[in-house]
Structures are given as C-alpha cells and as structure tokens.
Image (spheres, helix red, strand yellow):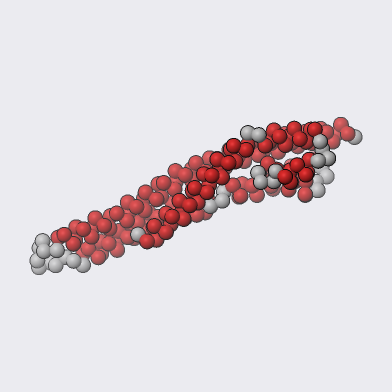
Length: 195
C-alpha cells in the first residue's frame, strides 16, 4: 500500500498541474493567435519584440524558434515549423511518462499486495484446528483485496485524465499547425509584395 500511496500522490500532483496548464492555455488560445497575426500585419519591425514579450505560450514560441532558424526559402520555413511542432508536442506531453507508468504499475502493485496479504493470511491457518483463527484469516484476505482495488482505482483514475490530456494535446497541435500555416502564407505574401 505504501508504494501505491506514493504513486497516487505524485500522479495526483501531476494531474492538478496539467489541469491548471490546460485551463490557462485554453483561456489564452482564443486571443493569442489572432493577436499575433494582427500585430504582424500592423508592425513588422516590432514583431519579434512582441513575440518575446508573449513567449510563455506555444504560438509565440514556435515563431520565435522559426525566426531564430534563419530560414531563406518557404521550404526551410516549413521544415523549421515541423521541427518546432514536434518540440511543442513533447512539451505539451509533460508528465506523460509518469501517467503511463502509473497506469501500468498500479494494478501490478495492487496485485502484489494481494498476493503478499493472502500469503500472510494463510500463515494463520492451523490445519488441525478449524475455525480457531478464522477472524485473522478473513480479515487478512479482505485487507489483501483492498490493495488490488486501490491499484485499479488509481489506474482507472489516471487513464481518464491521461485520455483527456492526450485529446487536449492533439487538438493543440492541430491548432498550432493551422496557425503556422496561416502565418507562413501571410509572411510570404508580404515578402512577395515588398519585392
């Protein structure tokens, strides 16, 4: 039970952090992409300064990294954008390994607790005297089964949130790719007009 308790506390802390992260990101996402595109249209010279001020969101981070890669052609821009989308995907999947480990190991730890508990319960059985230690045996069995139930509850709880976070991450990557494509079109249209 102690390892299960330790894992559940760590997983719960990571879940709360991710909930706050996605809540804050969704609140900002309605404004930031549009604001970035509007700022670029209005003032190209101050655009990088504006991005650096807003660098705590994935949209600004992608463009900052793309502009730091010193692309010359549209294909270079696309490659830099794709590399940065992969990096953002990894950043958005923070604690993904912890959640996967929790889902995999919690039921096994619960099962291990049950096996050890049953072994301990069977040590109370005195074959010659039936019914003398029945309270210890049945109490030990019920305690042993609690660890399996606890392990399964942790795994199920984690799977629910892991699925939700994966869905948020996939939607965010789609939005980032769409934003990057729109910015690319706008950037190279402005570049061709200035020539």
